[in-house]
Each structure stands twice: as structure tokens, then as C-alpha cells.
Image 1 (cartoon, rainbow, N blue to C red):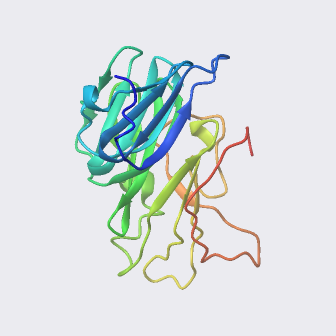
Image 2 (image 1 turned 30 degrees about the vertical axis):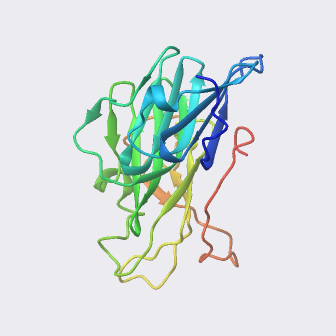
Length: 231
């Protein structure tokens, strides 16, 4: 129905579908709030959709392919007509609260966020959501099993392609290593020095970015923004 002005909620994120017409804006927030601007008025989808949890992130590639994510590993998809909060999942997703979602195409989307002092990282391959916090993808950046009291939260996803996407989060330190690692993280093909920016394979590892000499390796990053390719 139309926006209920008596509904006092905290709006957290918004998404504008750039289709040349300013009539497609979605806003998400606490208590599963979903609002849509159609060019004339705001419509409140909250009660009709009944999202299972608070919503914190939203992104999409077209007006008929929009994803939202939220607390308690909540994920929903809009197909242009209706919302579905029962997405296909491969295996089990580790529980956590989403803070960022980035859709690069209909078959390539990523979610990251926090789970206690650690992180969540999921990817959509066009068929199902997959937990990417695993030895193949995140061995180099996951400190939860290597260093006591280490906080390795991830807060934001940036990039124009999956092949050269970056994550922003807290600095991290592995057990047995005195050197702090940067909270800026890049998806690479085989090693820190070999990032293949032509390969969109989701099954590739992430590494902390090697910052210039003198840079503050202990800085914590909580947001990022993509203005264009390589920027």
C-alpha cells in the first residue's frame, strides 16, 4: 500500500535502478522494511512481503533482478513482480548479518557482513548461494582459527567486476606473524602478486592488499564506493 507515515523505522540502505527513468528506487531498513518509489509516490511493500528479518543491503542489475540481504543471513530477490525470501542455497550458509551486497550480473552476486568477531561471505553463481568462507576462498584472510581475539569483520564490497572486486574490513593478524595485514582485500587468482583481472571465476582466493611502505596497516575500513573501473 501507500507509505504509512505512522511507521517509524530506521532506513538503512537504498538502491536506484539506472534505466534512464527516475522511477525505480528501493529502500530497505529495520523490521524488514521495503519501500519503493515508482516516480509518483512511495509504496510500502513491508507488510505484503513479510521479510523474516531486518534488511541492511540492496543491489541489482535490472528492475526485474534485485537482491536484498539482512540480519540472520536473510536473502531475498525481486523478479519485477514479487519478492522471494527462499533463495536456492548450496550446502549451508554460516550465520551472520549482511552489511553489503554487490551484484555484477544475473549470475554473479556477493554478500559480506559480520558474524561475531568474524565475517560472512556468500556468492550467487546463477543457480544457488554458496558460502565462500572456506579454505579455498578465504584461507589467507580468515584469522578466526589462527589468532585468538582477532577481529576480522568485513563491511563493504566494491568493484565493477567480480574478477577485480575488493572487500573493506578490519585489519587482521595471523597467528605466528608479527605483521598486521591490511583490511583492504582483493580477489586474486593464484597469489598476492598474480591477480587475474580477466577471470570471473568465483572459486578463487582473497588476499589482503599489500599497501605502500609507511601506510597504516592497522586502519579499519567500514565502507567503500565504486566510481568506475579501477577506481
